[in-house]
Image (cartoon, rainbow, N blue to C red):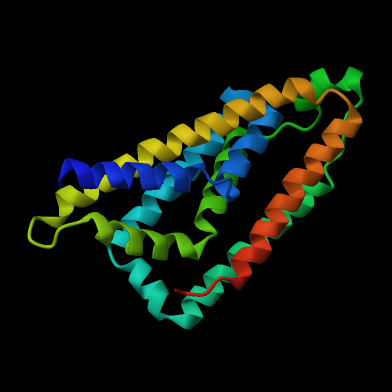
Length: 210
């Protein structure tokens, strides 16, 4: 792979990953709730799902989803419903008084496994991701050279950029946690996060295969 081609891929992925989609919103919201360290299991779930999606796309699952209307629709609506449900939970999440904020985590403990599972399910809930990788990678690959090394370079690059942006969002969320000391600010953040997840779910339910 030519260096210029790889740099174009880096720039493209940099801006694609920076877009605040469901994965980044989840990393930020868990950064707010649990801090940067507490959001690491969530990110692990997101990144494991990302690896499976890229592997599935490389193996042809993305092409299958692109050609099977029924399969795509099933995955699409299940994923959309899950995001809307997460949004509803965030929207209705209780707020804490200032004196209770410091002990918020102790009141409603969420295990690392639960955070990991949520991250995994959110990332896996978008069938468009399979089609996206199937469509994206070939644009930067040459047909006259071995495919596997090229796929590994592209997937590894995407992985590094995506995980870096997740850290940025989680770190930003952790910093916001100190700002969210009043019930009003907490309620506004809950509405923002919940509305964003529900909007993402509704948007996901309307996407086409291509």
